[in-house]
Length: 130
Length: 130
Image (cartoon, rainbow over all chains, first blue to last red; front, side, top):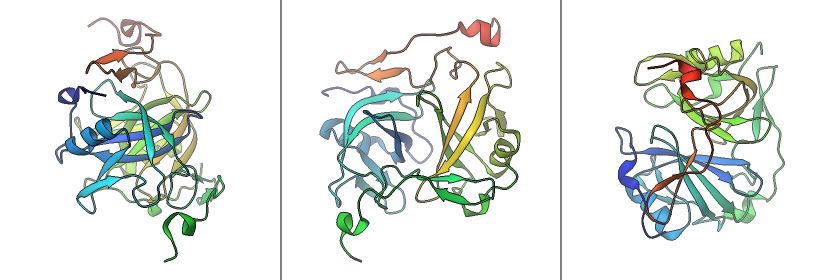
């Protein structure tokens, strides 16, 4: 993508905008992260989802360690220009736990979270032993 | 739902957590909003998505004006306990523009946003004439 309407976006007081990532093939919502101006431009230019890590205050190129990149297929914006929906092709499981999606737990009537999706890849295979 | 594991969640410095809403039937991502502790409990107890309006600093029961409620079917949490994915049954178009989803515009190579989804309902029918 050679040009991107970044000047139309409304970043928050911390210079961030939330970005949802959805699997372009099966529509699974994979994760949510925050981008700043530069990580969004990097996402656009490199075609791989790159967040801004709020805890580490640095670029967070998703997949940099694990190889599980999110390849950008479409970038959409909401009606208020303050959040993004990125349709992406995931190379492998998105979650660091080895699940397809980070949203693998569902609230139950019992008041607990239950895992409702399988681990696809052993996390040690993604990140090495700790 | 009589019980909900709200104490496990990590709200941000402003007491908020982002919540993605996805259509439980066709998997369309409809919108993203923020919830505080009380709006999340209201969402759980009433079964209708209720955000916290950051601009107005009050409850924002989605559909209160238009009737286009989002009926909660499942609440999921991410691996870091700091964002939610709510699967919901939408009564009608979610966006105030009359589109099914708030994410109805896509970035084009030309550097502009293009509408890629139709208006389903005239906004005047949802909110009355301005």
